[in-house]
Image (cartoon, rainbow, N blue to C red; front, side, top):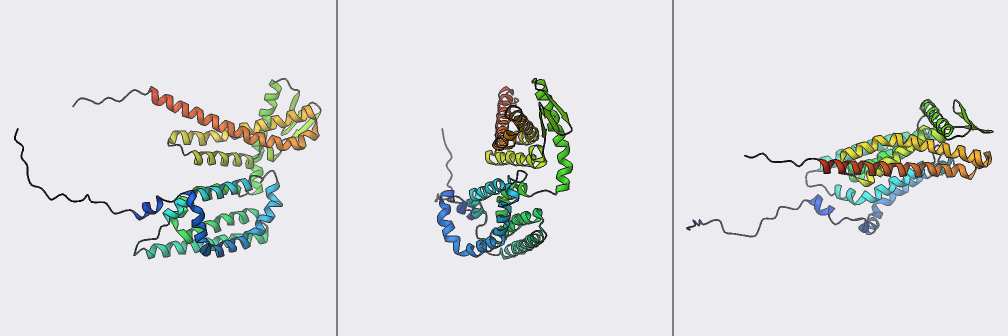
Length: 335
């Protein structure tokens, strides 16, 4: 067999595409490398951190001695702590996204600086108004605005896009207006009271209900806002969204399905909490129901919600795997 060999260009070393500076700087960044990097960045950041401390330490003192030790807003420090942990966890990606811009990108830097300073002015204005007029919603919301503005000025919009979820997650610690909470909470308390009465009556307990007041045996229990209110629902919704962000399922059906199921999961957990408090009062007296065991019922609420979220997530995973396994294989048509 004859082969036609034609001369071609002289072989040389394979061409290597130019390295992407963003990928090149992102590859070696790990959480383990953060400590030396943070020490190196301290001279640049300490004035910012000192200014934030002077601004917000009085606010945190007020919160930890008032709103954040109440049942309605007790989730605030948990939300804030988890958000800070998420920021620390994603900080290598922030540093990679805010790599030094190429030559000629000064206009982009100037634009991000303008928007960052505008957001900072908005956050400081909200802080001054909220602090002076004791509007807790504005005072806590200003923390989110000022932190986002500092990030935008220092690292740009790309870094803010990387940290979109921690800042969105912190919105759950902002208290809503009392009138709106009261308007939405009353139907929720009625529904939880109705479900508690019917479940315990079906179990054989001597229970009756008048509005949101439960009568079991010789005891009367008022279903309060903290037991079945909007803030509890939002807290459990935040817990579910945090779980979704942490797991990062590739299936959109699984993510959307779990996000939808978080609402009935929150309602079910509230019903279980009220049932536990009712039974504690029925068997151990009113003092036990209002004492340490009342706080224990709060832990039951979050443990129940977490177990239900994990159970629903496992059920969705099992159904998707079963659906994928039962799908008929695709066949190619003959050409």
